[in-house]
Amino acid sequence: ALYSTTIVLPSIAGGVVAWHDGYFSWALFLLVVIALFFANIGTNFTNDYYDYRSGVDAIDRGRQFKKGSEVLLKTGLTPRIVLLSALASLAITIGIGLYLVFTVDWRIIIFGIVGVFLAFFYTAPPFKLGYRGFSELVCWIGNGLLPVVGTYFVLSGKIGATAMLLSVPIGLLVAAIIYIGNVPDAEADARVGKRTTSVRLGRKAVTVLGPAFYVVIYLSIVLGTILGIFPAWTLLALLTIPLAVKLLRLTSEYYDDIPRYAPAIMMTVQVFMVTTVLLAVGFVIDYVV
Image (cartoon, rainbow, N blue to C red):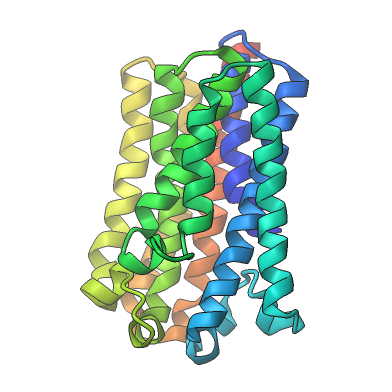
């Protein structure tokens, strides 16, 4: 449930921007949020199924420190039930998407096709994008660009510059969750042929790439404000910088010590949630004031 926020909050942010710009419909907004929520469930269950099949969950020492949805190991559900649950969830997303295509704008199908493709083939063959080093890119698109810009498009019929730029920090915040969260899994992932960024570059790379993620995230927010694309109130999001610095200290000092490194993983989620909420609040305050 916690990780569902990585798709719901970006959608809410896109909806807030649309509302700020004078475009809003509760019915359409709720349909989009529900569709994305089930897409996220489908992604997680598909990921659980294929990670279980690969054997990586059983040998991954870092897995015990995560709060993810490894349902096969936690509840004993059969692989078949998990896969069927994933397909059923994605079917709900597709159904809502088709309704929006036929009743709102046919171009919504582009967002839908890309989104469902990334959701299923993140770990499913033959593409297995997460196994080929595209985890961060997929998360930036699937949890940033698509939910923020897609929600805005459904509500406004436009691809706004504000929504496009807002998708950058939000998508990178989720990509940082994935990247930093995968660092402890590097050894297990390598054994099953999962070529994540940490497998390719080594765990120590987090001492450079970790800070790089957050520098770009916060600079993009500042840049958006300087250019007048974001209201000045969105600078409230910079209040999460101290927490980001704290988690980066942990990742830099303990990238080879999984138990001590583990708290940083949940902190990436906290930084994402609070930063995204503060960005949305900035637009609300600007509209009200």
